[in-house]
Image (cartoon, rainbow, N blue to C red; front, side, top):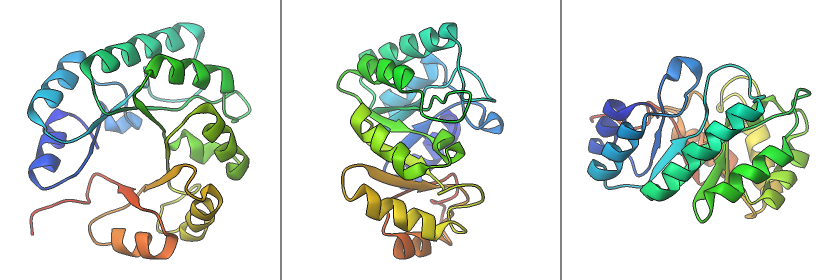
Length: 199
């Protein structure tokens, strides 16, 4: 979704959940604590917070993982709805040890794995890994390109997940095409910065 002002606008236009982050030009990074607290106070819908210390690669150092753990702990104390994470190995596989650490730190919070997923070649195997690791949903566009272009891949992921994990479609989804994505893939949830607007 984006920063506080964008999140507030989306809330006012009828969004039913917010993914709060900073610096969308970098694909989204962790917002400030003040942003999280103000959103929690003023936006009366579930708030999911991006946990990503920087843009660029989804391969993180030990220090960066420590930062992510502290940010998750803050989000848990602030009682947000969910945290959004994604950690890969150098060869673009799920970093199981790191994800396990972050999920453990989340405690009872819902955990979404973000579009780092789209860099993984064998997505069905990765889905199995994420289910075992306790991930609740995966934000994906089904590969490179947009969700609309990858409708078949998304449909296969939904079928493969078979209710074990939520497939959250994102990537190029707008108010004009989300219905087609839902109809053709079977996803129950969609994500985008241009889904809600004044009519």
